[in-house]
Image (tube, rainbow, N blue to C red; front, top):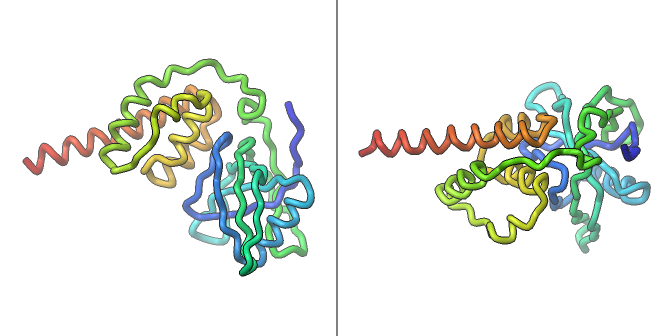
Length: 205
């Protein structure tokens, strides 16, 4: 298993759940996160994203390590980056520091599948068919022909990241260790929404 740092800078962000093998563009303007991004870029380009909770400045236990794959400074002082997902991690504890941003000790062991690509081929045909209907009903356009060219993990993680479902549901998917289970859970979530829509349409009629 590839070795990643045990202590990483963390960008807590409410409503953004980010998965391995997906890309996340970020527009950085707060000084603490400008410091974080610049420090990470100058060190190993690695930083963590985790969803923040609504109370006590706390965060969820599971987040995703990303690598800065694109970095641009704008004239007004902002930094525009693209973060490419590498592996999920479990937070062990916060590490006190004198920086403006937060750092945490993390462990990647339970998510070794993200790095080693050890997952078996999964059957996602039902999920893909349901997702096409679900996205269309929500007015979301996706180039499905290009999408099919992605590898299995990229397809499932991208769907989980961009699907119009709740943040809690996305967090549940992020915490699901195996790709097979992720497919089943995402399919169940989408089926629930499709069933609810059909039920509402029947009620209106």
